[in-house]
Length: 229
Image (cartoon, rainbow, N blue to C red):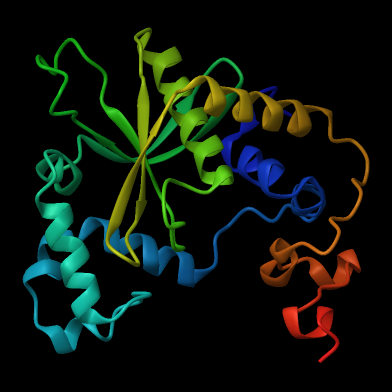
């Protein structure tokens, strides 16, 4: 078994160590078709922005077609629109000192000047929806892992990564701040040392959408039940 930890395992460790335990035990690695369909949107931004509205309604988006177009229009105004829509590479396996994982895109940075002297920016494509601000912790941890792996391979500094949410047409930046690197190290420690069944989460909203909640045996509670309704 490779000593390198999968970046996807780090994301699970940040979300719920018990979920990571079950995923490893069952060798549950392949994303479901719905995830692949949502990720495919990240490679179609120009066509989705300019295509017919009725066709957009048939795609796996998580907002209304009009809201989606508005989000893509804002994305179009970003300095890195051309880089996002014409990546240097896609689905690239990056192997670093401690972890390895797939960067769904490597994109040029408009701030880097001479692209021959600077590494590209790794981008993680998420099938879900973003929080109101920033990026969910599991995805931040995974994005940091990809940036660190790319920096190790290129022997160059990589100070940020991107997380794309193509189902809503939003792209967020994850910078390698002290806090984000600390979250990455915590997840790496959990993933490396996980040789037992971790404790269940208690009354966590995370359990509602977890594919392992039945075998885990955790009780989930809705707001109504907590209020005695």
